[in-house]
Length: 146
Image (cartoon, rainbow, N blue to C red; front, side, top):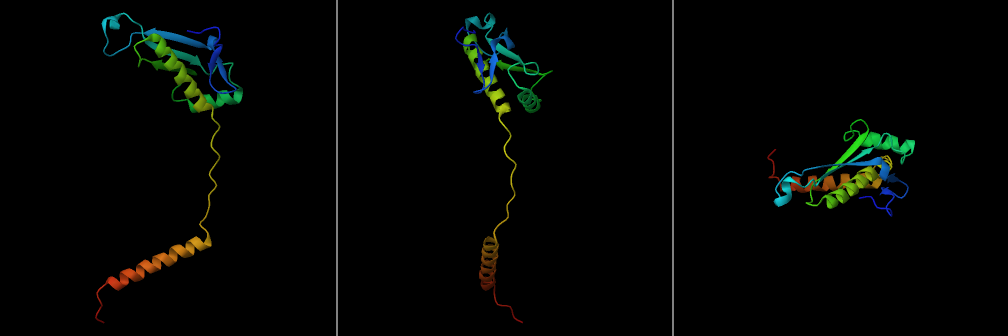
């Protein structure tokens, strides 16, 4: 449950998703259970509209929409949690999962790889070692009668 001391979902140091942008859906969890299995709505779906979020700058929004394009449906990200028996624990799990997914999508891209070449000395050492192996194997062969 959103509490007064928790104004939103903190994703990174600069990004906090306000509670007003998060919506919840509850349903019955699948799998085994006890007496309350048919009555408790413990499965949780956390829905966040990334395309219309005011928490993201235009650059961040573009990055999130691009990186999460496979998970978004119409710009909306849905996180489902049903691993716990208690709805409250599933809510916390869904919040944590949403925060980690969005934080991962917001990370800046890695710098491009700068190709390097082996040094001249490294090439020479490699070729010298190859020649030494060749000589060793030549000596192991039976002598050839000419």
